[in-house]
Length: 189
Image 1 (cartoon, rainbow, N blue to C red):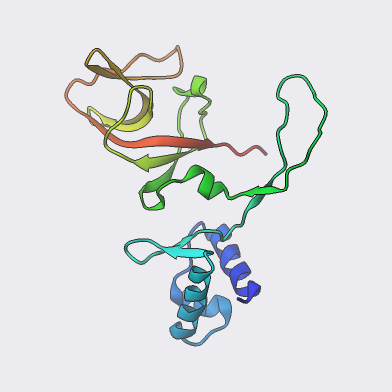
Image 2 (cartoon, rainbow, N blue to C red; image 1 turned 90 degrees about the vertical axis):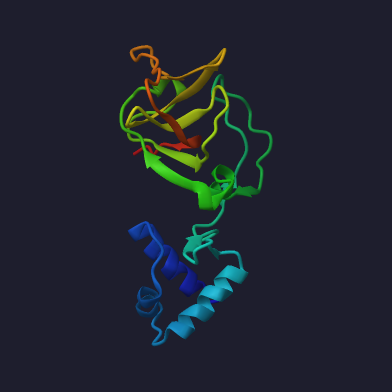
């Protein structure tokens, strides 16, 4: 496979935060037909670089590549580095178990800061309509969306913030679980 094609598609994806459609790929790759684009796409799918969801939309799989995992870093007292690992990790594979049911949400507010989720972070959420006690959920409660801990205490279900300045939420009429939070992404400058 021509790495230039993969690099151009990856650059488009990074810039626009979406996959290019076939007509955009024609221009991007310098092709005159959608058939030529289809051949490149099929080759990238065979290589595992791209994949298609159930509705036929292209998804980046290994488009942005794996990142090396060098080992552990001490977050307490400094320690000697004895060994450097040559393993790699694909961040999408690490955070996402079911791509068709997973999406990102940007966090607004600070009700979950004690769980390490801050205003401006991105959370990785997996669509599910059931939760276990202690899961962090995306929920529709009494007409409003929120992200909180799902709590079930002796059959009494409520949502608990991870910030002592906020109160528990006891649904008055509606509580629908939309997703379970699977991870958080924070970008430092």
